[in-house]
Amino acid sequence: MAEVVIVENKTAAGALVADEIVRLIDSKADAVLGLATGSTPTSVYQALREGLAGRDVSKVRGFALDEYVGLDPAHPESYRSVITREVVDPLGLDPQRIRVPNGAAETIEHAGDDYEQEIIDAGGVDLQILGIGTTGHIGFNEPGSSFASTTRVKTLTEQTRVDNARFFTSLDEVPRHCITQGLGTILRARHLVLLAFGEGKAPAVAGAVEGPVTSMLPASAIQLHPHVTVVVDEAAASQLKLADYYRYTFANKPAWQGI
Ligand code: GLP
Image (cartoon, rainbow, N blue to C red; front, side, top):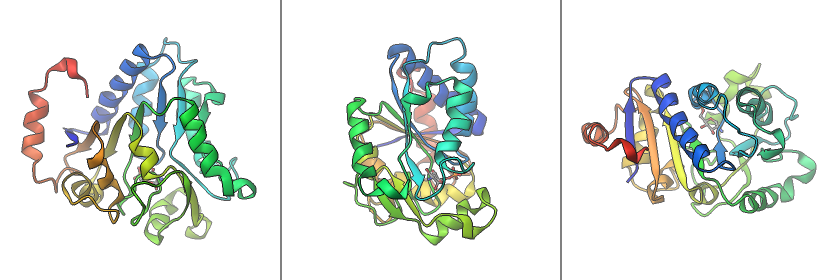
């Protein structure tokens, strides 16, 4: 099962995950990171500024989970812009080594397959950071997504558009389509780290970790993966039946194991 770590707050979560990423880069200079957008992983990227300071990150590679279709990559809320602003620039990564699915309409028919090939050519993702949507999506794999899916175009649910409208000037501006790594793509990463904060995420987290494995809750796909770490605050953990067991397990874990 997933290892669940219940932390005090976002900052503690960011520090924990950043430590693991630093450890990974120390052991593999050309580590491949799976990068998530949204508000959830920002504390990880923040902690990495300090964690990676002074280290050679010139060989680190990264693959974003998803992108909006048809949104100008220069738009401040395109995931290309977000990843550049929040990850590439502050951490001093090589922009050439950081890939984001191509949401341009002209090439969209083969953009998914192209992206899959790029991930394979890079040797696969070592550590995939994940947030979770209130619909239970990871990446932009909305309910009903196949567990075998690869990078492809998806239609966003109205709920996700409403959730993401806060990043745009109006709901109308939120694109209706996205291109996202599939659940099958995500499951091929060697280590999944899913983060969630706040009460609004509690039902999705409980479903993902303890509910039945079902495409109706795409994040439940993590139960099929051999190495998953779920990092949540108390509010996001509030519907977990085995919360006390997770606390006990983590408190008694040997430090050398990492996460
Ligand atoms: C978006 C992204 C997801 C992200 C989710 C949660 O839909 N495509 O990758 O996990 O939102 O967003 P937030 O972290 O802002 O709650």
